Image 1 (spheres, rainbow, N blue to C red):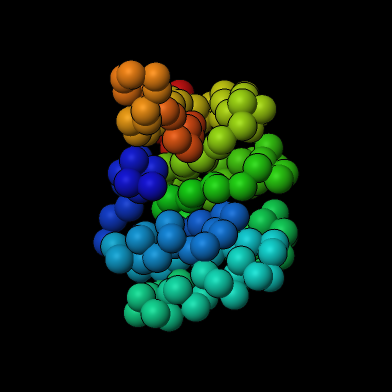
Image 2 (tube, helix red, strand yellow):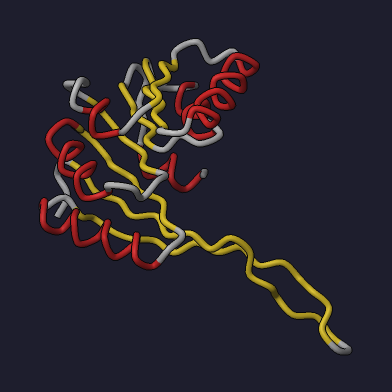
Length: 164
């Protein structure tokens, strides 16, 4: 999450979208700098969970939306940064974001297909900057020794205004 937030380059007062907000961790972290955060998820249980955590964190500048990202994003005219944590309808979401985001768009992917789809869509839109593969490994016993066992690999795909 730290790498994705750094790549978003959120500045004080920015308007940021967290699409596929899930637990709300990215939205809450972004709210510490941003002026307004729009947290979107199609799952009611995710929105309820994220809303509870935001209240507990004192993050009062997050607006939550339950529904399809494309429908909700079409009602938001301008964004400074956007984080995409889900893969459903990714090309359509990126089309909308490319027209609305003044700064960076960051997509996190755990599946190779999502990585490919994000890069191809961003290239088509002329906004692709880079993809970063992150993986943490922890030691694990093996025979008489120790090995590193990978945990939660993720791809961070970055694009946005002024990229290509």
